[in-house]
Image (cartoon, rainbow, N blue to C red):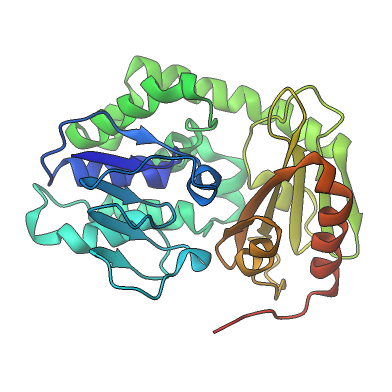
Length: 299
């Protein structure tokens, strides 16, 4: 039996909870949502998928993303919720070896971006927030660290985890990266109406950093569009969109919007990835919809 999940904090917590209750005998399969959407992932009959789009071959499926809803019977649990980890915890509540309420509360807060200004500017003061920021890359070379955090969450409390040498080093790296990232955001962001547009395509690599910083830097904006190349060959573009968590006036369902451009996500945040040749068509349409700021909910 295998866990298939995505490499973010929510996915890491999902993996820990599932492994605590199911007879997992294979390494965790870390997958980007777009790879699932494009059918690039082979899913087996005993796989448990969490925090990713549904696949008909899986044994169990857990998710909470608006655009991943399905209308067919399945085993597992789906509900629009702050985190997928909360969904997994609900499903396995009677089988979990200990109380994970504190961890789930923190994961809900982080994955739903329910943060205040101090938590954005000083994540080092908030143990779960700084830990979540140490998972900052989708590169496969990071897999040993993702697996390490899964192990730690299953065995130790948050303060012990933060004293782990590798985690401690990562936390220091996060704080250094955030300073550089803030400068890059300032240099590569423009404001159009109430939309902040951060275009990293002039850089050699799309930088990683505190995804909430942009909202503190441009408080007049209600939504941010972040653009970059997905890989060094520059043949794929990634666009990430997020409602401001400090100026909550954006009415656009981001997941619904981006589902029209080979992506998806939540009401307040999502991403899409597409061939570079489509960028001149797709990006202006995405930005224009956000500038218009008209509700686009579908039932």
